[in-house]
Image 1: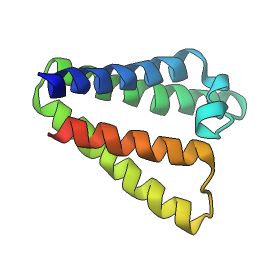
Image 2: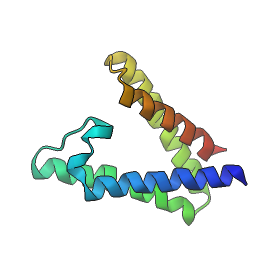
Image 3: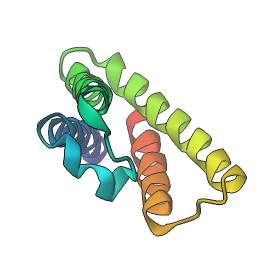
Image 4: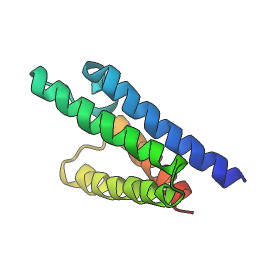
Length: 111
């Protein structure tokens, strides 16, 4: 029961991240380090950070296996982020926080 509640929280957090990116694309710099440039950049933030995250967060409420897919997605993001932190020497606080959150959500969602 606790795992299911945590999985729901993970999915909702994903949806909220997507909604924030969709509705306030110019304000994502604080948690992504990305500053959209021009109309094209704003569209990319809305489409990828908004659309994809909303879809990934909503699907588990309709298809149980989607929790697993969402978890694997978070773990893949964490793996690439960890490698990038080392290669790009980008061990800043926001990157470490994102890595930890992605690992935690990933583990919870694949259980």
